[in-house]
Length: 472
Image (tube, rainbow, N blue to C red):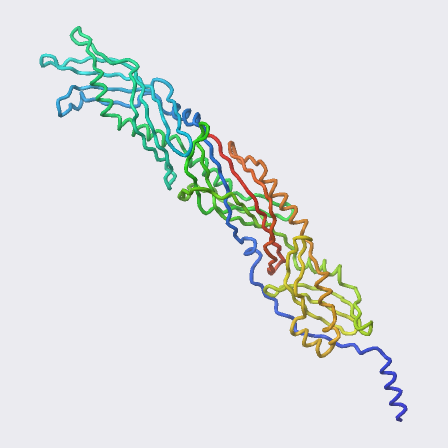
């Protein structure tokens, strides 16, 4: 009998190690962000709108609008309480109003306004009021200081700098030629304030910054297609408008308007953005940043990522302790648990069943792939391996999986980056409005796990300008 037991012991020692069964509890699936929350992550940027308005355009607009009778007063109908002689005055624009400007940062315009004036004057001779009329020409010089209020109103402060007679006014009364230069001059001096106020009203009407900036504002807000294949759209959500003080360069009014806002990406149908009808208040700043950044997203569904991982691992045999033990990975499944990616691996061989590993996904900018960091067995799996297959727990499987696990996302990122750059290269958004820029830096942001996909986010940074020229 003792020989029978000895024989069974020897046979058992020479046979293969018995197969163990693994059945650890699966880690709970959970996510801290949805896909849309990641896609709508906001990144503050500034889009520059350099505005250059030629003085000839200002001059043309003013001369187009300021025509005909521009001023009239009549003291015949409302006699002066001080008993001064009555006068009826009508003032027309005689020729082209010329506009010039001081150089540099002094926002001072100078206007030379040629006028034709008709005057009907009254003179009391021997107690009787005698009247006569005359026409003459005069050129008045004005200086206007220009600024923009927070509500986008153009604010001008005009003062008169004197005038020159083209022909001096006289009237004939009782057969005599009577000069009325002094009378007309006093009347003009008395009414120059009214004339300058009239000019301020016309300038405020014609120098319109609201229209080109609102056009640029709405253009920037429109979604831009980044990838037809991945149905990705870029949007800018403006927050406020900045402006630098006006300056004059080579007969041009120059300023920089900055549209500060957030960039975001979305997937699916083109977002519906209604045109704005008003602008936020304007903020005057000494200078405006020209930085711009947008998040470029690449996504891989868990099914796609598991399929890629399966091509690397499924069906491969792994040996341990010099071949004494071996396993083959039969299937791979992936899902998320907060910030960790869970790998569910189905095994056959010296042990069979499922094991669970978890690691932090990370974007590798050198290979443009999603890789795993600190991959290790889940606590429940570790407990089972400790009791059933400690050789697997102490082996190199987790390190091999970490080293070889990659999800390539470079093609998506490259295509979207190329699309963004194409949108930024001399893109004529409207007449006189050109979008131009360059992305010169890619900086990884992170990898995010959502209920539907693994998202890799990369910042594309650069400079973007929207140039507006002229008064249309």
